[in-house]
Amino acid sequence: MKNKSFLVVCLLLVLTSTIQAMPSDKAALHERITRMTDAEKMARLETIKARVETIRDMDRSMLSRAERKELRKEVRSLNQEARAVGRGGVYISLGGILLIILILILIL
Image 1 (cartoon, helix red, strand yellow):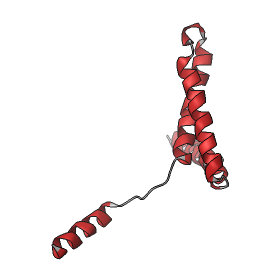
Image 2: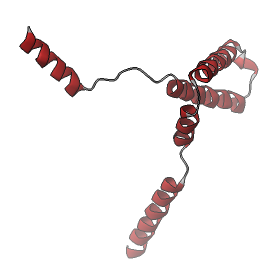
Image 3: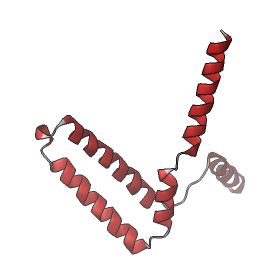
């Protein structure tokens, strides 16, 4: 019993240390996007849209399972990149909304 528990603890230790040691693609993507100008961001969004449209219009019935899987991965990564590039605007938290409502109630 001690050997099994020791093995499980060692296995968990190895798995958790490996996960933390892996580089994050999101950090690299965020760094690359912060270096882009607004014109480059808009151009990148257009190329992403064009690529997604070509994938959507593609006849996928003739593709193998591995090729379809690669296309799904590509679309997911393009979607993630488009969300990161298109971020902007104003985000208001729930506390901020409640504060604004209270101020409006007091004023009116």
